[in-house]
Length: 134
Image (cartoon, rainbow, N blue to C red; front, side, top):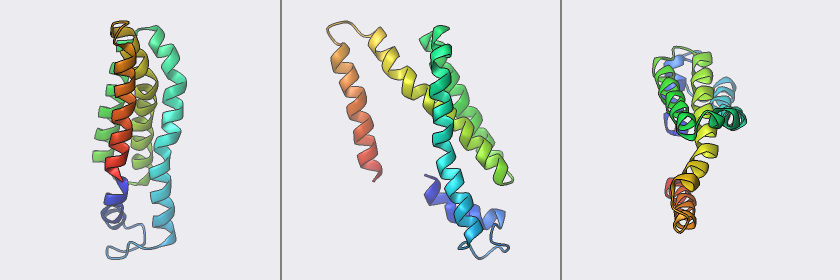
């Protein structure tokens, strides 16, 4: 998603020193950091998912929703590079929480006879979503 908005973001923040050029080393580096920092946040989120899930699976997933809302709001309100990095990190933390928490929640909430089906459908639709995004 960020690759689609990379040029307008670069021009809006004038990372190349002007409002018409979006191809420079600084812009390329900053776009790479903004795209990849989500995964660093996901590692943090996955790390904290265990302690949060001890308070309840639903609480952990609700915490992820709070991270997504806060990260999206911070990205919307971002006025410089560092706010974008912070917002993407917050969204990444939510991604890590969801990645760990959702399969556990699905397995605990589904009946024993349907657990394999729902777990498989969860993974299948993730793969279909990735394929559709290509």
